[in-house]
Image (cartoon, rainbow, N blue to C red; front, side):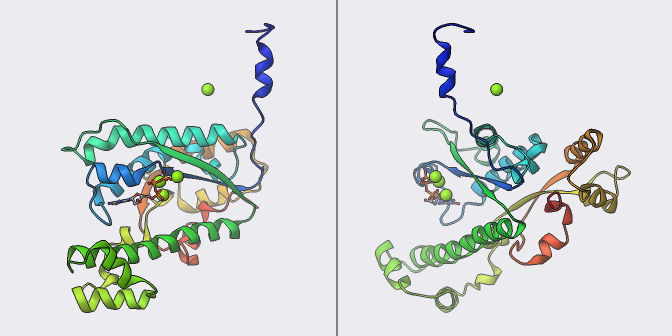
Amino acid sequence: MANSRFEYVKQFESSDSLLPNTWIVIRIDGRGFTKLCAKYNFAKPNDRRALDLMNAAAQAVMTELPDIAVAYGVSDEYSKLITTIASTFTSYYVHLWPQFFPDNPLSPPLPSFDGRAVCYPSVQNLRDYMSWRQVDCHINNLYNTTFWSLIQLGGFDAKEAEKSLAGTLSADKNEILFSKFKINYNNEPEIYKKGSVVFRDYELVEPGSHSVSETIDNIAEPVQQSKTQEEKDKKRRNKACVVVEHLDIIKDDFWDRRPWLLSNKP
Ligand code: DGT
Ligand code: MG
Ligand code: MG
Ligand code: MG
Ligand code: MG
C-alpha cells in the first residue's frame, strides 16, 4: 500500500516499547478459566492434570523462545513480546491438551490466555514480585484445601464452609484440616503449596558442552558483550534443559544456587 491514500493509517500504530534496562515480567493468565474448569470437570481445588498441562506449555514456550531471558529484561517491544508469549502458550496448551486429558476432548469455547507486561527496575523488585506470587499461591491453596475438605469430606455446603472459614488465620485452617480430617497441610504436594518455577538448568546441560562455572562467568560478564559472545550465550540457552520445580523462591537459597538466573543485569 506504499504511497496510497490509505497509508496514513500506519500512523495509528503507536510505539509500545518497554522501559530498557529493566526486568520485564510477562504475566499470562487463563481467560475465563472459572468456566473452563467447570466445563471439563477439573478436580477441586487442584487438578494435577491441569497443572501439569500448564507446566508443559510453559516449558515448551521457554524451550521455543530462548530469548525469554529477554522477558526478564532485554527486549523492547511490548506488544510483540506479550502476544508472542501468550499466543505460543495458548498454542501449546491446546496442542498438549489430549496428552493430559485423553478422555476429554476440547470443544469451543477453546482455552485462551491474556498477557500483560510490567517492568521492574531492580532485582529486589523482581524478587519481591516472585515472592508476592508465591505467597498468593500459599494463601489461596491453604484456603482452598480447607474449603474443599469441608465440602468433600465434611459434608458442608459452600455457604457453611465459607462461614466457618471467615476470619480464620493460617494456624486455624491448619488446625481444622488436622483435627477434622487428619490432614497435615505440610504433607500436601509441593506443586500445590509452592506452585511451579520454570527455568534453564545449566547443571543438566549435556556432558562436554560447558561447565557450570564457565557458564556463570560468561553470563556475569559486563553488559557490553561482543556479538559473538551474545550468540554463544544464545546457543547455550538453546541447549540448556528447561526444568519445572516446586521450590521456595522467596528465600535467597533458590537464587543463590542459580546465579545465572539474575546475573545478566548490573
Ligand atoms: P479471567 O482471568 O478474568 O478471565 O477469569 P478467570 O475465570 O480465569 O479467573 P481467575 O484467573 O481469577 O481465576 C482462575 C480460576 O481458575 C479460578 O476460578 C479457579 C480456577 N482453577 C485454576 N486451577 C484450577 C484447578 O486445578 N482446579 C479447579 N477446579 N479450578 C482451577
Ligand atoms: Mg488467574
Ligand atoms: Mg485475566
Ligand atoms: Mg484467569
Ligand atoms: Mg510478524
